Structure formats: C-alpha cells, structure tokens
Image (cartoon, rainbow, N blue to C red; front, top):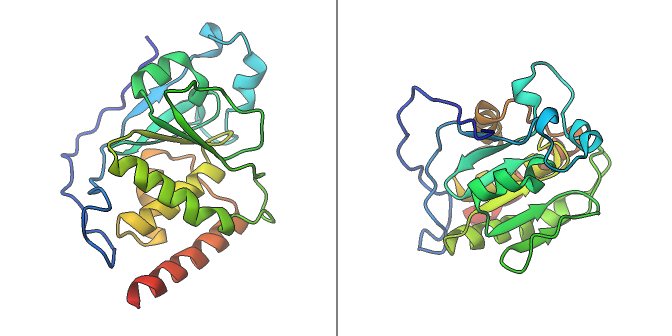
Length: 215
C-alpha cells in the first residue's frame, strides 16, 4: 500500500481571516491542514517502469522520506507535489484532482477531459521571470477551489517552481505574510525551498498585493 498518511498530534486550527478587500463568497475559506502525505510508488514498485524519471523527481538534500516523490496536502482542496507523483495512478486516485497546474516545461501528462489543466512552461533558475504568471495562476487556483475543486500543483520536485505559486496563493488568499506562508508550507513539506530569484519576486508580489488591498 503506497498511501502513507503522516500522523499529526495537533488538532486542526481554526480558519484564518482572509486578507481580501472583498470578503464575499468569491474566495473559499482557508483552513490550515494537518500534515498529510501521499507517497508515490517506490522504485521497487515503479508503476511506470521509468525508474530514471523517479530518480529525477527526488529532490537533493537530507533524509529519505521527505525527498521521496510525494504529494502533500497544503489546505483543503490544494496539494503540492513532484512530477512523478502528479502522474502516479494511485496518488491521482487518492487525491482525485479536478484541476492540475504544471509549472515546468513539457512534456506534460495527459489527465483526460475530466481534469482541467494549466501549464506554465518555466525553468527553475534564479533568472526565470515568474511574476508575469503569478496573478493568473493564483486566480486559477482560487476559482477552482471556490467551485469546490481539488487542485494539484506540481513541478519536477515540488520544491521551487510549484511551491512558489502555492506561496503566492497563500499570500493572496489566506491572509499570510510570505514568511508565514513559507513556514506553513515547509512544516508540511520540508523540502520546499524556492530559488533566490523566485523569493525575490515573491517579495515583490507580496508588496504589490498589500498595496492593492490597501487602496
């Protein structure tokens, strides 16, 4: 069985106040989630017979479990994962996403007509311009969750590109500061570490968002 929930001793926290100039039903309520992880297939039970791809989706760093391909619950209806887990049949069956946002260059997985997809073809470098895509991506996630959908956001490792989009979403729709969002996500997915260029742009996004809601 490759479904491996990570237990938590903490009780679910109360909903956070949204940092929106418009607190209407246009945005779903955000409730912090307890840590929950769906591990994808191990190399020994590789469902794709593509072990090289599995190895590419293992983020470099310490520890075995946190760097295995896995999908992480960030909030109700919002998951963050690597590319391998985003294509793993068992993980997809457990998550049952209605929307998938791929933040990496092609080739992209075909999820079929029942799943809405969005693609942002960028590389994970400190020189990549992420800002032009953030507003649209964040709105896309918010609209999907408002409609009751389940969104899976992924890149190659679920560490930098896709994590940056999720962090921007939390800043815009969960009333979090960027530092608070980063701490929140890292508590659930420790390998998350946006590159320096993305962090710089996320701070610009945060400043722009705070300026917009203050007007």
